[in-house]
Length: 128
Image (cartoon, rainbow, N blue to C red; front, side, top):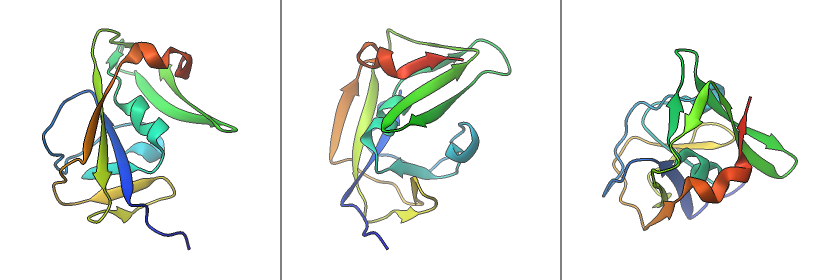
């Protein structure tokens, strides 16, 4: 059994002083209610980017190839002008809900907030 990490990460295109539990919508395993965080900073950074729907079928998903993590867009585009936020969070109120995601049903105050420019992640954004 692996030990609980001291810090977890959450990405969002919205700035918040603290993170509150709410329903999140993604693709497949990434759907989950309440406050979701991950151990892998690279995944959270991709969630900090704003993806714009081009149709009702639009979606994005996080993909893995060997040690490479990227986002695959289906009928989406990127808001290249919007800065996102990477939140570093203390893990004490989180429980592990699957192999990637941690859940908190309580509000969490970040220990650090970093700006995320989508331009820095062009190589990690793929169109389907």
